[in-house]
Image 1 (cartoon, rainbow, N blue to C red):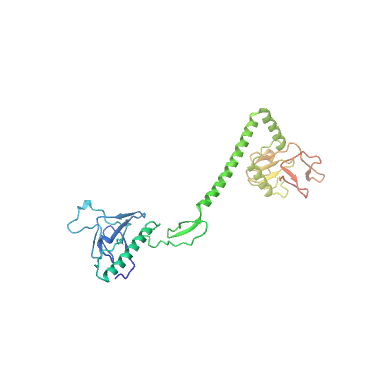
Image 2 (cartoon, rainbow, N blue to C red):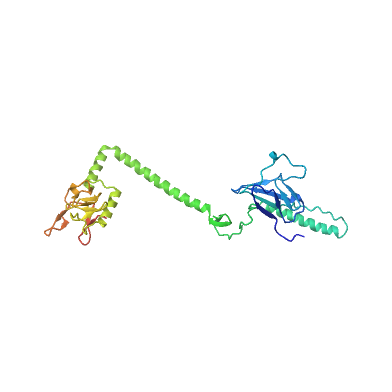
Length: 321
């Protein structure tokens, strides 16, 4: 009579214990199997050097009179290791009840059940399975259309995730886009190299650039600093004021329309003549602005073009869009 469904037990090693009891029923001592699990989870099937007797397993252990020399025996189960003892019964039926009725009929019934179990085992053997020690691993999962399955972050069961094929298609799309953009960059680089290789074209480009920015070398970071500085300028109209204390990063405009960025805390240090405190952002050599009869700065009637400044709807000066 079998009244329990328990068929394995796990012991923590301590470096000294060699006798490990088990309480689940077995048919023969050969039904007992052992697994040694290291601290990192690596498992090794133990196929020798253990002895089963009277509901206990001795490891290392041997039948009386068959002990090898101590140096030839494996080490005891160490601290951090686990010893897993489980039952593995061969699917066979060896009882012969003879040919007298109804015993041979009963034997056929048992034989049929044995064959069914063997067929089931053949199917199970081809299935994805967790290890004997992973008895708490949750193998149930709710299927989701178009999703893949992976082990969860805790290593305790399965979860659905985005299908690798879907991610692959997305990656391929990104790759194709990058390839196209790289081709465009290469084409632009070729054009640039062609233009740079021609001295006259380079000279014309230099003249055009000089006319456009009026001799100022403005990069993206300078424009960003200029915009931030203009917004956060210490004076309302962003004109330099001798009585105002400026901090690094502040940007002001002088009366001739030139723009300077503060690099050191400054008070009453004119930007145009104080390079220790100010660096030019843009300079205006061709006059764009002038003072009116009230002493206010205003655009000239016929101003020179400026790519750095413009007039808003209220007639105020602001950075160009």
